[in-house]
Length: 103
Image 1 (cartoon, one colour):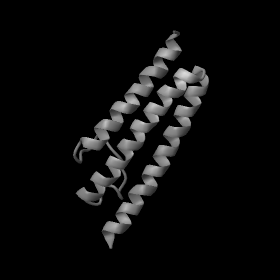
Image 2: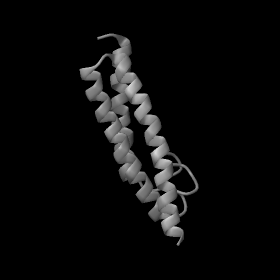
Image 3: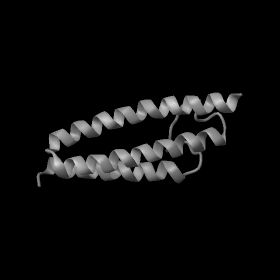
Image 4: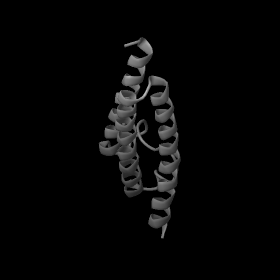
């Protein structure tokens, strides 16, 4: 196993750990979705960060599975693509939760 593959495996595991932290940590200035929509109130924070945490854990699991099945470069592309999609989907979901709470 090369140092590059070890780095990828560590990145995938950290992705899962960050996801779990996002799901259970209360509102704070360090961890979580840091946009104004998610910070509107505690309910929007909790919903948007729980959703983001679940997505992040899925990204880590899919990435580890892809690393076991495909080459490390393919796993890296899958990881980066799914991570980017997670960010975009999390922002959209935070906006949806914010709109529902604002009503």
